[in-house]
Length: 421
Ligand SMILES: [Fe+2]
Image (tube, rainbow, N blue to C red):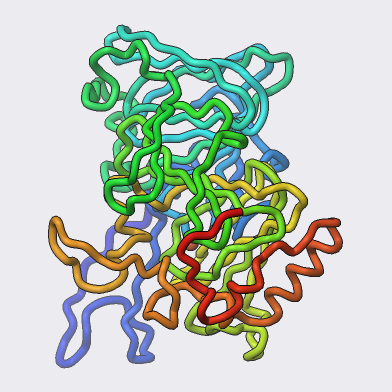
């Protein structure tokens, strides 16, 4: 602690604040409560645009949780969503936990069970997990993750801890709070963990949604045809445990195909669960629509990733274009960790397109609309030629085939209304 200084009021035309005599007024970037919390937890912190496989990241002893872990804080996600890999010891368990933020898990390896109960010790529920199970923990419910196998289990968690810790700045409020959210984890809980089966249209976008608190195997579960990010693209948004902030979706690209480049604010993280892919991302304002052709190819960041790997789709700080490629012989399936809120998807939906139409209004989803129609997606016929050339090379090296239909590379064919595999 430095001694408190007395505030000195400016005189004459002098401005108040931090100055260095160069005419600017400076601001300090202080560590946030979330960043301080991460340090205090004492486990490693991985930062960057992505990683090839999060299971390979070094993990350290995690006293509060009871296993080993690492934080994963990809570019563009800081102070917004928290992410971590946690290792559950063989034939062991993590400590019981509860917290006032929303949290969702992807099982990267192993099998076991999770017990979930209310604060008064009642309403004991449980379910089993295996590799590529996806589940969410109701906010402030007590839970305990066990490992029934003879090898360590690895789980990838994502949560809204940064928002909640930064807002309340009280560990006892966040981790030792007796409130039960009956509206999220209450009533008859007998079938609470029974996987949902029915698809319904999302209230906001009308794309496929499933209400389920557990997906037993998200790497193989059926995904309906969507086509919004390219021909044959499949997509499903799970609506889990009443989460309101932490949302996401599962998407799949057929082998030999790729997404249209598009731009939006940072925050979306894609985690591969199946196949092989790479993503590219570049700053929209500096790199433009054709970065290589225009001499800005060095601005393009690229991440190759397989199961367990991930990328921050739009690392920011301003909007970045990004694009995902299925270059392996199998379909490329990803779990998106933060975008596409089923109930109120303002971040990547229409609200970036202009004025708020007011409650009950309607907007065009500009991130799904081509730039030649005023949107934020680059139609295939306008994209940089290097994109297709490089993709073809990667496919050849893998013994996979380019399967994009030629008609999508024309102005007329760029927005095909109904496209089947
Ligand atoms: Fe995106």
